[in-house]
Amino acid sequence: MIEALTSLAAFIVAISVLVAIHEFGHYLVGRLCGMKVLRYSIGFGKPLVTKVAGADQTEYCISAIPLGGYVKFLDEREGPVSAADRGRAFTHRPIPARILVLLAGPAFNFLFAILAYWALFINGVPTVRPAVGIVEPGSYAAEAGLQYGDQIRTIGDRDAVDWEAVLVTMLEDLVGSGEVRLGLEGEDGWQRSAVLSVGSDRARLSEPGMLFDSLGFQPWQPPARIGEVADDGAAAAAGIRAGDRVTAIDGQAVLTFADLQTVVSARAGETVSVDFVRDGIPQSVVLTLGSREVDGAQIGWLGVGIENPGDSYWYMRKYGALTAVVEASAQTWASTAFTVKMLGRMITGDVSIKNISGPINIAQYAGDSAQAGINSFLRFLALVSISLGVLNLLPIPMLDGGQIVFQTAEWLKGSPLSERSQLVGQQVGILALLLLMTFAFYNDISRILQ
Image 1: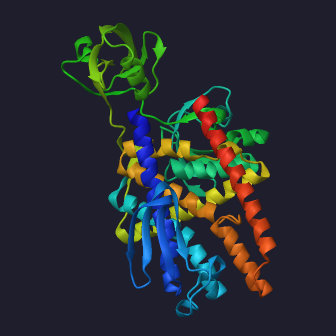
Image 2 (image 1 turned 90 degrees about the horizontal axis):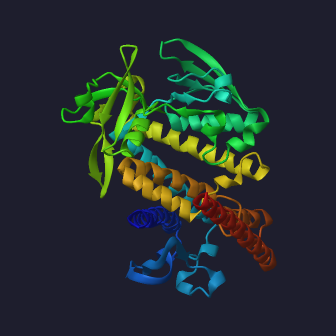
Image 3 (image 1 turned 120 degrees about the vertical axis):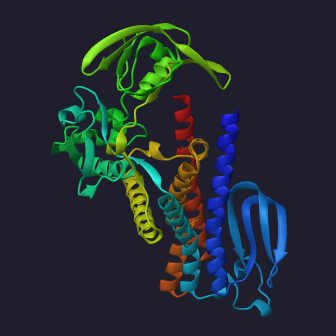
């Protein structure tokens, strides 16, 4: 229940912030272009809080349904315009000014993403270097020669700075050509190249959560190597030392420290056999696990901590204020280009439409990122802001992109489109949005039922 409420609260905060920024772009540029703003609302429906301010007596509202927002300009299509306001209606301003106002909303979403990434980069983001974890025998990864611990130095023609960059390029190349080139560095320092080739299987790889399972490897995680041993824990009593690497518990394989935590947590108070390796020599001990109370439940406790993997597998991605602007802009551009490419490939059928997420899935991500900390939530906001900007630029009549198409057509034609043409366009737009929402809700529900 608490998790659901957290997700809902984080979702409302995220949508409210991003919509406020989007609509503020329309509002600000509209005012600069000489248009009269009647209302600036965050949310739809009945206004809950309203403040009237400024020479134009603009209404600033927070409305009941926090799933959107709007800016209402003076517009002669909605009623007569007084002589005093002649020239200040949206339809009275030059067409380039109207287009600029329509572009401003998505532009502010992209600017917010740059600002969010900039804040992350100047504060420093602990970043796991992209490296290969467990490789499944007979998989695409195994056929390409990938091995546990291989660090991915380059992917395609790009440097592999983090997993986000790797995933973007990997999906682009695999969906496009069916193969991706990797520059690898093994644990022994040997550098080599490898080619992951999936052939006609590329469409399946684009389904959510399928990439690593289909390729047959997982991202690297720290091995179950002991860093520190608590004096009052079961490990110390059994003679386990720092530097030992646990390989199994009661015959259940343990490959990563996360595996160790999972297995131990489920066996509070049990007597188990622990297999480990010390200085290359396999050993085994029998011990009784302790227990600790976490969130009202008893979980197993071995009394060990993880060994610091050093800077070989992680680093702090941090820049000065000016360099961070360049890096944040590049990150935003890369994410925007990737989103546009994936949308295009969904239309052509090269990428699964299961990637379309609705409010339920977005709320879950919002809650998870909020619980993970401010850095994760900022990254989430940046990605959703980019998606919102791209979505609003689609040439669908109900969106900014569709209105830009109408304004451009009027500019080229020399007169407004006929009411019938606009009506047909709006009907097509509503149908397109309904289809998009249907896919999104279907995907959300399918993920919940899986």
